[in-house]
Image 1 (tube, rainbow, N blue to C red):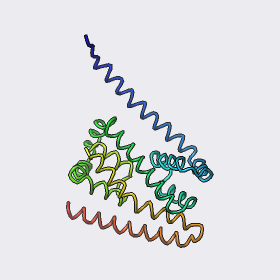
Image 2: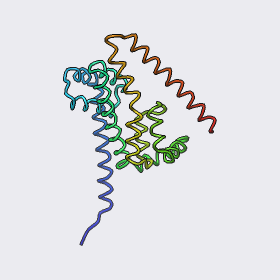
Image 3: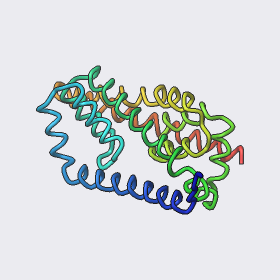
Image 4: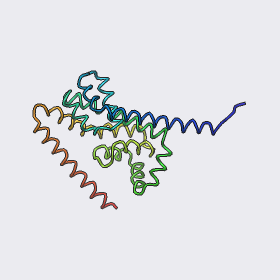
Length: 217
């Protein structure tokens, strides 16, 4: 005779969620305390797997703006190496957050979003246009990237749509900041010029996006 204990299963499910949350908090705390030491350590240890692990860690636990991480990698390892390592690292981190939101905290996060005014329209649009929605949020810093990963996980965004849109959408900014870091040692003014031009371009794109959104409303 097979015995079923639904209450016990529910308790184990809640315990598992809290353990994952505790693990993330501990990881965030350690990364925050040793963030500068970790960056210095990556400069001394030029092993590709270790660099990839650090790039993924800083993307998963954003205690330092990831653009600064990309610039630091570009300064130490050059444009090409920094770009593909940071691109792969942030894509892996996005996959981990997406999977966690989709499988562990999906129902709780979904009900939480539905209670927040203004987010229903955003999530509805993401469900209707998942690829363009994800790619737009990657190209334009409208919302934090961590939030994009969570939204995608709880709004039924297909896995491959999320991954392809994320991989493509992250490339331009990562390449720009890796190049800025690589040029900083030889020509700091060129790096500042490129960075300033990129920020001006992104500001214009954000203004156009907001104007278009207001017209639709």
